[in-house]
Image 1: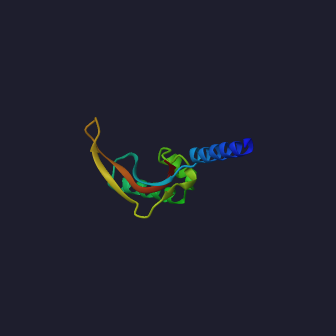
Image 2: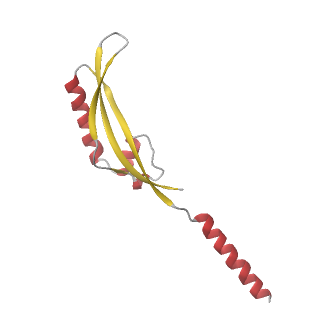
Image 3: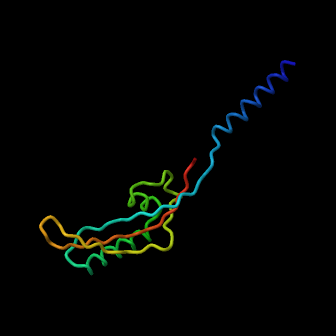
Length: 114
């Protein structure tokens, strides 16, 4: 009788403890914009943004996570999706001079525990 109670208690504790450690993995999709430094010409801004995008495409998951601000809790699952593109923003700086900033628009996915 004591063995049966002990077995029931042990199996209940085992079942409860595995539920505590088990978690659902959710794949997150997000878009990030990475800006380059300000430059004097629109073509230079496009070139800088394209160079940055090419670097991001060759980065491994850990380097990519670092480059976009550590958004993935487990950087090994971070991937750069197809469809990334570049744009250029025109702005006027405080001195009244028109400057251009390259913008790298990327889509990434990563896994997270929920």
